[in-house]
Image (cartoon, rainbow, N blue to C red; front, side):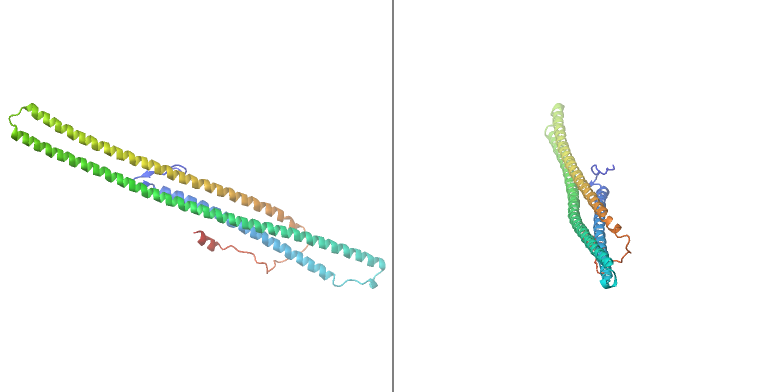
Length: 307
């Protein structure tokens, strides 16, 4: 009999079907691995956002250096007319004001983006670590409980089977003893009462038969009681295993909701960061600052730790 994903496990001779229990645990482990991969992707996107903010900071510094370089060789008032000198002074003041305003706005946007990106990355990492630990603990507990249920069920079935065999053997021994006793009594009756009537001998044989039947009925009653107790234990173990699997699936669904919320938050951050490069399209692309240290993921370390 095959068991469905949400239903109870099939009961075989020695407990639950081992292949079905192993398959259910493997599905839970696969879902945990998927959530771990989503967590790593979220951290990587947050690090990429921090790197883009660093590039914008480098580009702003480069623009500031270019403006400073242009102002190193100013034109003196002696080389031009008074009117042209006045216009140049006004233009220089306006350019300086625009540059300061642009740099201040860029610094504010960059600082806000960096703070939000780092906060989101740290929050996502903490949530993912907590969820991973809870899922791993729940999976380990479910596995241990399933093993305990299998062990307990096997012990109960073995004990019930042994008890039934003992009852049958005891009944057979009692029947044999009664047969011997009846035979002995028959011999005594034949020896001591040869002249007794056939009715008396028949009545004695009937009494012996009734005693054997009563002993056999008692043995059958004890055997039926043991079988009913074993079936009740199997039903309770099956219900408990089904409840554990249902609880683990509910926790996995909760982890999926957390993953979708993290993806939505990262999409919002990306939408807020996209307008920043568009304001500097007229400037040539600048290389990334080699001093900016972008954290890299260590998948092997995470895998060994998770394992």
